[in-house]
Image (tube, rainbow, N blue to C red; front, side, top):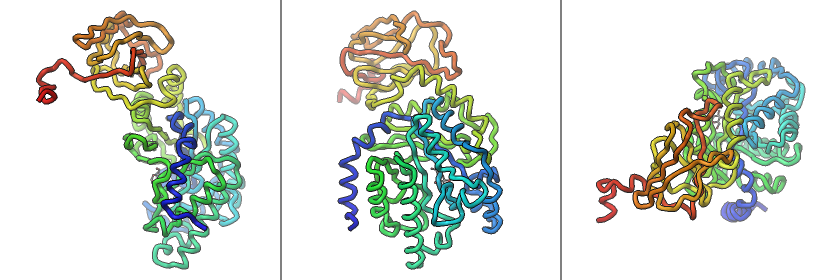
Length: 426
Ligand code: GLC
C-alpha cells in the first residue's frame, strides 16, 4: 500500500544525509539536452513554439541518425572539465524516448537511430567514472493523453500508467542510477493527480540510494533554480541548472560571444561553493551527437583550473560569514581555512581587512608560501611579495589564495568605519 505523503517524505528525509553525501561534495555536473529537436537547431521547445504539425515533427524520429557511441565524447569532456556526474534527457517534452521502451514505438530503437541511446550514455558514464542521472519530462506533447489527462479521468489513468511504466523501465534496465531529474509537471495540477508519492516510492524501491529533484510537485531531495545561480536556504540541497548560450538547452548554433567564458563559469562555481550548492551546466549536442564546438575551450580551461584547485573546490564547505575583505576577491570557507578567490589581480600587495582572528599561514594552492603582515588592532592583513602580474596562465584570471587561521575566523567588513557601524553601538 502506498505510504501517506508525510510518512513518505519523513522516510526520504531520514536517509537523505547518507544518500546525498557524494552529491554535496561533487559540486559540478553536465546536463545534456539531446533529442529530435536538435535537428531543427532552434531550441528544444521548437515543436510548440513554431506550431509544427504533429505528423511533420514525428518524421524527425526517422532522420535522427547519431554517430555510434556519441555519449563517450560528452563523458570524456565532462571528466576533463572536473565534473563528477551527468544528467541526460531520456525523454524531453517532445515525448521521444531515447531508450528501448516497450511502451511506445516513438523511441530510438524502433526509429532512426536503431539503437538504445540511453544504454550508450550509461556505458559512457561508467567508462569515465561519472555518476549517472536521468532527466525525465513528465509533460509529454506526443502521447495522446498528454493533454486530455487534465480533464478526463480515463485519460489521466492511462497517462499515469504510461508514466509509471516508463520510469519503471528506466529504473530497472540500466543497473545503478544515481539521480532522477524530473521536469515540467504539466498539465496535472497536484502531486495527488501525478501520484508522485506512488511513483517515487517505486523508484526508491528499485534504486534505494537515488536522489530525486523537486519537480514532481513534492520537494524530494534538492531544489533546482534555473537560469540563475542562487543558494537555497541553509540545509537544503540545491543545484542551479544553466544553458551554455542563455537561450536554448537543445542544440542551437551559437557564436562564441553568446556563450559562457571560463571566467563566467568560475563565477557561477564560486557561488555554488560558497552557498553549498551544485552547478549543472548544459550542453546541447548536435544531431549527430557531437559536442558543440564553442563548449570545449571554456569547459576544458575550467577543468584545468579545478585540477589545480581541487581542495578548494570539491567537498563540504561552510557558508562563509565573511563580508568584503577587499574589492579584489570573494571567499569560500572550510573550517579554519578561507580561500580567497582573487578575481582582480592587485599586483605586489593584497590588503585584506576585517579579520579578527590570527592568521597562521598564507599560500598559493601549489603550497608556495606568501608572506604577510597582520595588524590585529587595525584588523588588517597585507599579503606581500606577490607577483606583479596575475599568475594565472589559464585565462580565467582567478587565483586562489589559502589563508589558514588559528581558529574559525571571525570577520567584520569595513570594521574600522565608525559611520558605517554606528548603528551597532546604539
Ligand atoms: C525548462 C524547460 C526545458 C528544460 C528545463 C531544464 O523546464 O521547459 O526545456 O529542459 O527547463 O531545467
